[in-house]
Amino acid sequence: MNKIEAINVDFHYGDFHALKHVNIAIPNNEVVAFIGPSGCGKSTFLRLFNRMNDLIPGTRLTGEIRIDGKNIYDKSVDVDALRKDVGMVFQRPNPFPKSIFENVAYGLRVNGVKDREFICHRVEEALKGAALWNEVKHKLKESAYALSGGQQQRLCIARAMAVEPSVLLMDEPASALDPISTAKIEELICELSQQTTIIIVTHSMQQAARVSNKTAFFYLGEMVEYGDTKKIFTHPDKEATQNYITGRFG
Ligand SMILES: Nc1ncnc2c1ncn2[C@@H]1O[C@H](COP(=O)(O)OP(=O)(O)OP(=O)(O)O)[C@@H](O)[C@H]1O
Image 1 (cartoon, rainbow, N blue to C red):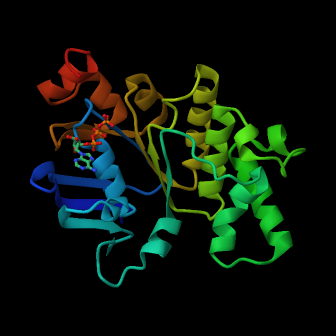
Image 2 (image 1 turned 180 degrees about the horizontal axis):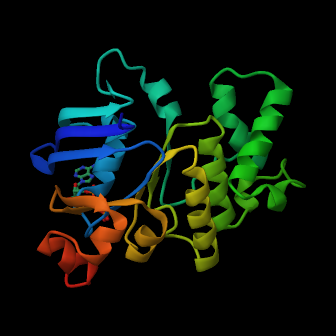
């Protein structure tokens, strides 16, 4: 069974038709890249997978988004539980004004975990998983704001991973970072994909080619082409995809 499916998805911001009849099937533990020119609907589509667009007034969705076979827009769905299972990392690192430790422990505490030993263990595991442990293990009580941008972004990944989501959504997670931090985030994506299904929006085609197994190309609200990353970047079926990846527009 596919981990994630979108079936005949249309999405409107008021009168604006932002996503048009989008269908996608994402297998478990794949890394999928969403590419396409600015404003084509990548982030809008990404945000549908943890119902982040619910927070925007005047929006309308038709069609279905299924995770593990269940329509996540069904009335019976607990949105908090959904967002625990479908974590998100944004373009700009957004740590809380708390210590490094408390940033990572946050999701566990919100979920009612009280066992101090368990929390310490999970925080350490998450920071190791985000390749940050060695850099912060001696200063866990210091403010997260004292970290560099790249470290803050890895902290945000650790924070998302601490509650063990099965899906991680990443909206241009490295676009504000230097090349070394970007390389670390990309390595991390490859490692995390062993236990998590990852969707990444990126403007960097090199990045999409490096980290993803599958790539979806969007244009003007439509998903023009979706397939194995190698094929999309070597011989795509659609002319629009070819034009985009060769830099002829976008
Ligand atoms: N909150 C909003 N209200 C109204 N329109 C919106 C909103 N967010 C996005 N849009 C519009 O929806 C379209 C798709 O936006 P979206 O952010 O999904 O594109 P994108 O492909 O992720 O772009 P970028 O690569 O620049 O981030 C754009 O035309 C945008 O102006």
